[in-house]
Amino acid sequence: MMELTSNQVNLASFVSRLGAYLIDTIVLSLIVSVLATFNVFSVSNQTAYMTVTLATGAIYFSVLHSSKWQATIGKRLFGLKVSTLDGEKVHFIRAFSRYFIMIFLSSLFYIGYLMIFFTKRKQALHDLIGKTIVISAK
Image (cartoon, rainbow, N blue to C red):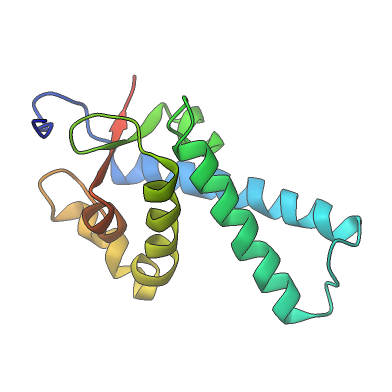
C-alpha cells in the first residue's frame, strides 16, 4: 500500500498529543489507584507498584490503539487517531510494541517526543520505529 502524506491527512500537533497524553496519564493513575484500593497489589511494595503500572499502561494503550477507536481516551477527546503509515488500523502487537518503545526510548530525556518538531510526518521516536502516525480525525 501507499504511505500517507501530510497532504492527505491532518497530522496531530505536538500540543494536542501532549494534552491527550496528560489525560491518559490521569486515567491510568485513576485505574492504578482503584487497583490499589482493592488490594490488587501492595502500594508499599515499589516493585509491585511499578509492575502493575507498566502492565496497566501496556494494556490500556495497546487495546485502545488497536480498537475501532484507534485512540486512547485522551486521544479520543482531542480527536486523534493512531494509524499505520498507509492509514490502516494498528494491530494489537504493533500497538503493544509501540507502547514499550514509547516508555523506554521516547521517554529517555523526552528526546523521542521532541522529534515531532523535526520529522516530516510529526512522528515521535516510537512512531518512527513502530511505523505509525497520529492523525487528527477532526
